[in-house]
Image (cartoon, rainbow, N blue to C red; front, side):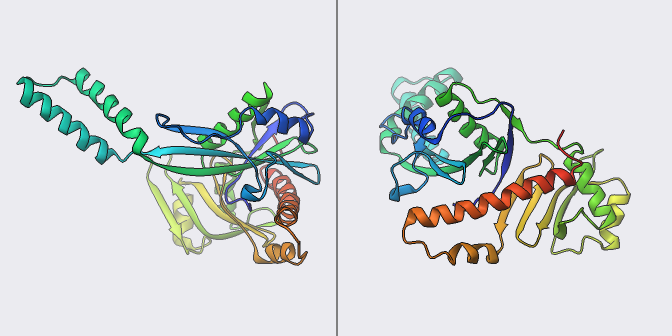
Length: 299
């Protein structure tokens, strides 16, 4: 349940639904497995997984949801092989070439025939709503996956007005300044990884296990390259990579936080989830505030 990526959204209207009302709204869009001819299915599942049945899990005023995506696996090589077999059969039996439009139609037929036999792959995406802060936190590495989950919430609720969290200073200019000065605002500290890009020609330099205050790296910044991605640490409790879209990647909570959660000795899966969720939400609340402050406040 501990988030590994983070995209934060600002609710532009107060979230007034109770956990019970949200659960009722999501029920109509509960996950159903792919049928024989479905290429993919989306739906809501219990955040507790097999240990729960409720589609919403609320702790300390925060509301967790989980969206499941299941899709059929059809390797391109398999589709291509079956398609070439069909084309070869037509050419041999009818003695004529197969045009592009007919080829496209045959490809659709091949996919349609293979879907019932295809294996499925499932992934889940967690998010939680923090009504007191008017924020939504999504555990998604891509904007597309985050928007897919948010669209599902809008569909269930009828409306969910929000927008990505934005700082006064763009992340690129802020991160470039932090590296140039070898010091981000407290309580953040630089780690040993970044990605530089030249605005004029798009050249990219990726640095790992590198002292970001080294002259050889700073020379690229002084020559006009900007920082697109930057590894940072917050209070030595959260380690992450920030990118140019204010997305937090490779989010890792320090062992001391995980130990605090474990010290509560919960008796059930639900209590374990509650302990982890409460600690994570508390840390991310202050983390998001500090991140906005580091970017000059919220735009």
